[in-house]
Image 1 (cartoon, rainbow, N blue to C red):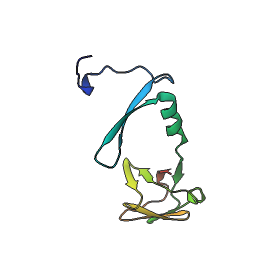
Image 2: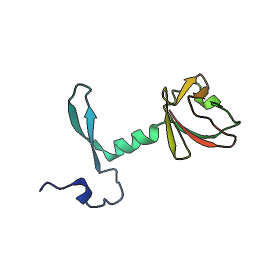
Image 3: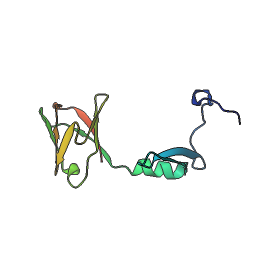
Image 4: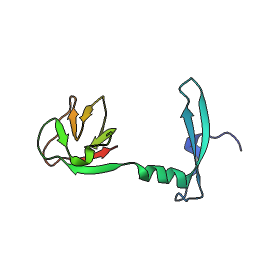
Length: 113
């Protein structure tokens, strides 16, 4: 096969369990390793990620929900923005505290653990 740009690849049909996903892993030593992942394995990983949509109870910089307790929330997604743990918010038990961000009553937020 001749070298082609990614932008020139054809649009794929629906993803099937028999397909493969090509991935590149950063070995964190200035080298990279190429892998081929079965689509079924990739889909199982994505669906196994723990996430929950919640509605903020009150205005402020904190979100408290019993679902959070015992999990490590890695990201908050809301209003077309993503916020990251230890950058935009911190976690203590069942409470997330915004660092420079606030939440408002009835705001929908997606928590990803």
